[in-house]
Length: 433
Image (cartoon, rainbow, N blue to C red; front, side, top):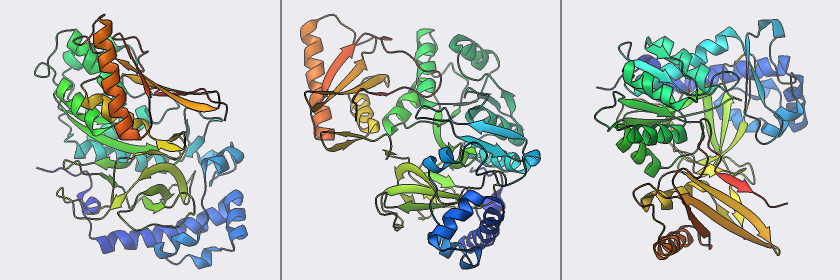
């Protein structure tokens, strides 16, 4: 039986959702105009005033905002309320430059935690469950968001944070944890370690996992489900918008439902900015409808995906976004070809390899090189040079078929690639571009 945290809104008729969005957008645009000079200036430059926004149909008239704007306005330039009304900041990892710092009022935190509670409930969570939150805590949004959502649902919450893998496993087994929240790469590592310790899927008390914060393929999902004996659910979010819970998977696992009473999703052509119809692939753009402290309008996520409003078997009526295929800013352009790490991961998992790999891109004599280092599983490990060469050639052929360009494949021993307790470092780009 499908469970809902707030059924009346999660399953609301489309006209009700549209009316909520219309009302909240008009109010939010006025709030931003009155309280965020940085964004008001962008609106003025585009010749738009709050009077031009009468409903969500007018959203396209507003200017975009990007991560570059967030860095330019750092730290306080996009704050929409007096600082004394803010109760918390969260921050991105800062792996591609200056950190993004997002601000929250208590109201913002309450709404964020409700979104995470919807995700936990959609994964089957109730107050009878034991929810182990193995996302990082602190500035990273994963831990605090799912922790708060777990409390809202009424689960017994184990705030383990990331790391100390054997202790994580001890708590899962001793406290009979039923829901695991972490990055998919860490879930894969936990499964690998539990297998080493002699635990099979029938021994593990977990029933569901809520995994996000990095791209992962369907093949990786099935691998995790098989190892841990669970159903693995995707969750999506960005620090800039609040954190995890912007959208989440239901039991149908046919895309993630966007919490449309709090966020409007658009798909645009990343080159022209033109809004694309449902079903077309493009860049995902979000508008936060009721965020008080850090109200972003038309934020360009750089994630590439599609939206669908087709009826979902779970009963929820909110638009669904597919799992992002990749990002416009970490998409690799190699010898003129667009390459996403998820494509490489699909080939590896389809050929029986674990989800631990590293992509190394370099430029030699003005030509891009692509080297994919792949861990062998303990079962396939061998020191037979001929066998290794044959396997490398097989993978290289599979990658060329998928990508359309040649890649060098290097098979390495099990555990030769460093494990990640947070977001996995999949790509090392050594080119000076």
